[in-house]
Image (tube, rainbow over all chains, first blue to last red; front, side, top):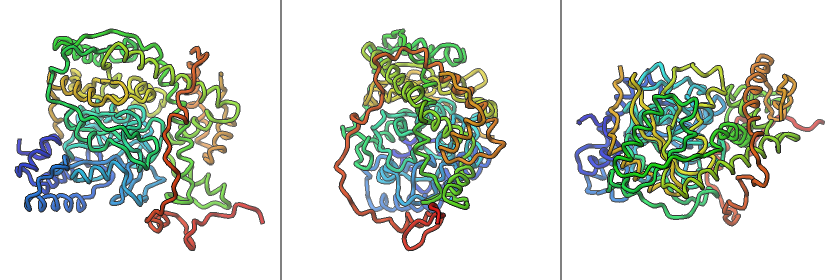
Length: 489
Length: 96
């Protein structure tokens, strides 16, 4: 395999360190592929070719001088960043007209960590505006297309990062996951997406959507890639008060599928209910059977509050969004539309700057927090969230990990759900409960539909058990193999 | 709690959120919000007696509140639509 764009991040890093692949050649290959195909995929909002090539040249020069890059596990790896992660070197638009010309005065903590680990940052990727959506169609700059089938969505909201990794424009990427925004696009593009425990990765520099749910989350072509990126971005940061100080446990992937022997795998029946495509359910069941063949103990169980996650989430996340997005007022940054007085300026700026889904969620959240309704909506949803979290705590008394579908369907056609917000929200039915409970969850390819589209398996672990989650996912990957890269036209 | 999402309610909520919606935006938003809130009403089926709220400030560790200089003041001001003498400029907001 001599095409540097077809490598996973782990192999690209190994070849760079071994002197088999120059960082400039890997970066040029990614840029060439991007130039050829991103007109059709539209994964990127901003490409920093000069910056990426300069970083790569500096890495090559250090390697030529004898540097062995011991503390830089991503040296020579080409990465992309979702465009809601703040960067000094490139715009941070959040795919919103509100921030179309905004350049952050600082790097997000995860970006600083990636750069310090030797990564070559290629650019910023498309998303649903401010992370609000499940298809990347809510971008002010147009939708991203799925590299497996350009008429379909890559999922969302981190659809640009997922598509970029799937299409071979970069080796790995960062997204953000609030209710499934990394796991669902990973499932729909045949990539691996890991949402760490809430509080495990600093949110400093992540433009806030729903602060009690937002998690910076990596995409890779393999579980090992997700593990390397996770190791780099996880850890304490005093600039995020909710980022925990406990040490990060590194995943041991050396046992392969042997890690499944004696593992207790919970299969919650509510995740296979009505609305889950039979092909999806069959694919996940087939993987669980393979896990059992490899020595896992499969436990059917019930998580009775699962069905309430969509309702709870679509009160809580919009409530937090309505508060977080109050900062976009035309005063300190971003768009401003002048008005006769301050109130008129606020109203005109926000009407012109926000797209339809963002307005919908601001209204929903404002209503759920308004006088007379806050207890009936926000208060009730917060207490429902407690019951959903208890479902997980109870399940993890009996099992080590949970196995479910990631998305109830494979990638859907662009435009299929844009007229019906509730139908779009129901696409998140499998990913929302782990988000509300704050527990780590990972999506990896489980197989493909008869039509050839990727399908995803979601594995869920107890809080801060990312090392276990990654080891199990790696074991499953060893059992069932990885998907090939999609053929682009 | 069953909610009737009228155009008036959409406008009142938009006013709280400082969103000056166009007339053509209100009716479709009312219909969509109605459908979403009807789904949210399913939470009423839950027995929440004695169940505490999931998020509490006590769970959040706080560092000491120590002032520190931030070196990027000019860069931050450079992002503002209107600046004068190191301050953000806004339209008049008190009568007189």
